[in-house]
Length: 239
View 1 (cartoon, rainbow, N blue to C red):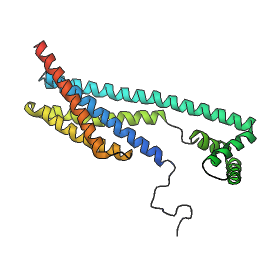
View 2: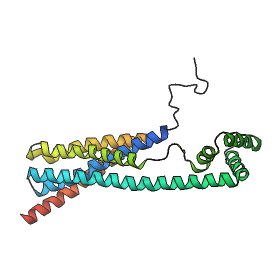
View 3: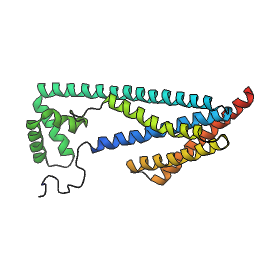
């Protein structure tokens, strides 16, 4: 039995698909940040010292500080966005209460600007307003779903987890491999991981994946090269 509302049931028709893609994209970018920043830190320390304990402590400190920084920044940013969304919804409620006719005409004008005839736009606005005026205006005017406001805590935890997962790769690679090959091993593991995150991030954003992967690996390689050189110079100066 077919669903008249969804002629292709195998296709995603959830209204929150865009939101899920945004969260996935944010997770990929968070993991990418964890990989690059932690790789730069541990490679730099490896250039300055051969002490595995010092390297591990520096990596753990960088991981914790970076993850907390990402979580805090995301929480503050998304909280500000949520406050703005709530303020806009309060204003919309007030306008709907004090000037309902003007708001309905405004809604009709929005649909008319999208290509509907004036008569059909007015009918659509009237029916949507009769059903749920706040949702109708919030979605059409503000691009906000009143029932799906952004969650700062969800954003904070997602960023912290993504950063931690990404940071663990270079940290484990450089502390668990022999001294003679630890920098090369870490560089190779990081290059592969950055290639994957660049590819996935580009596919999610409908961008050329190969170019994004190469660019991502290039940025990571440059970061590690600079920090390793700084570490070598610092180690030589101290020694």
